[in-house]
Image (cartoon, rainbow, N blue to C red; front, side, top):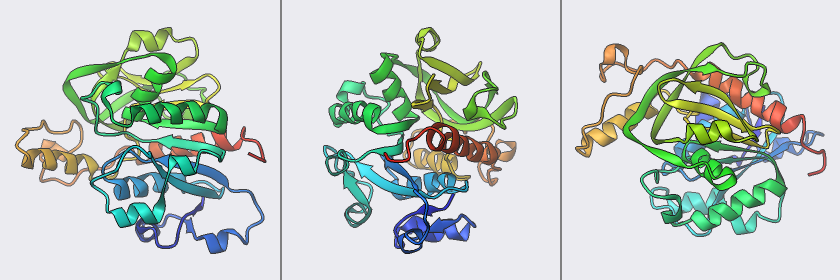
Length: 301
């Protein structure tokens, strides 16, 4: 799927070097098709890195996608250059009059806080309410998934004594789910989180179907029955080196982190990680775009 992005977005050069098909606005307007309108509410601290990770996965199917990058009005990021934010991001207040085929809410480094303690929580609740009427399908990732499950279904997060950190195996629970079409019976996915969701409350929720989970760390993928809300508790979008960067960052801060599980060959951090999740990550995002967005979204949104 060619993604229609600004020609000067830093991710463009990186994606093209990886043989990912991207399209500038100039070329897109010459094609007589309606592109999917996908918005990304990027709450991650390393926004430029997250952009490339998500765009890489959104750019791997045959449809054209227009991307809008959004940030909350009530939060001023400190780790991304202001020039980048001004050039490529729009506050939600400028976007709320629009409708979108798909919407992505990323993770955020605020798991240690109660939801109500997060500075932009009230606005995020307003955004999540807005998606119900203005978006065909919303994909919630990591902390975003915890927040979405809590807000929409009152399913709380449960702090972990030890961080779920590494690449973990998961079982496909509903193999006939459109989101898992083409999946193997087991697959691997990166995790980096300090909380699980309440599994008993999740299983008891009549509108939620658990699609993939692990006996060790619980649910990884769940969705509402109509696929208007999709929840991924891990980070299928992560690059090969993302967990390594987190490990070395915490090491340098003196936090004495554990090695990420099933990640460094021979558990030696000097060995380059081997990517074992990329194929299923691409398949998942392709399935979401095709079956939960493109096949059901109205032609005129």
